[in-house]
Image (cartoon, rainbow, N blue to C red; front, side):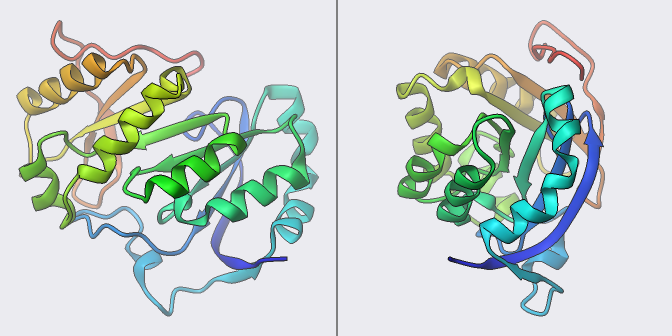
Length: 224
């Protein structure tokens, strides 16, 4: 059975990684080089990791199954970029079965084949699109956003927009509230309705929700 590098397992979380009680599993590695990366240690080759199979990960996490079942929670895969480990996540879903919620926190900057492979295993995607403007995206991440746009369109075409939360950050020195409002307009036009607006601090962390305005009002999520 395949094994992959797991950089962290964080238990008994609530409120940010999905509904109910969740365990966050962080993979090492990411295709982006964001200027204010939240987890820069996950980009390093010498990042301390454990090599685990899907079955070994399941055996470690199942101690919290009662919490998951009682609260509608489960496991959220993050990183790093979790969708680069699509086959691992598919195998993990086979281990845990359908009762746990399985989420992914992703930039969506991955090959379309990876997204298609992982979708049957996921209940919800939290997608940090950074900014819909190609120039701003490249300046901030060092990459272009064509893969992101293509994958967003795929999710809509598959009827999965309702299973996605689009995270749009205000990134000081890189975009503005006017720019985030334009990003909101574009993703709403595509068909997404669950939109989470917040501000980055300089170490990449979520700071606060932006004030609601007619231009950038985000759909509230239950329990958030």
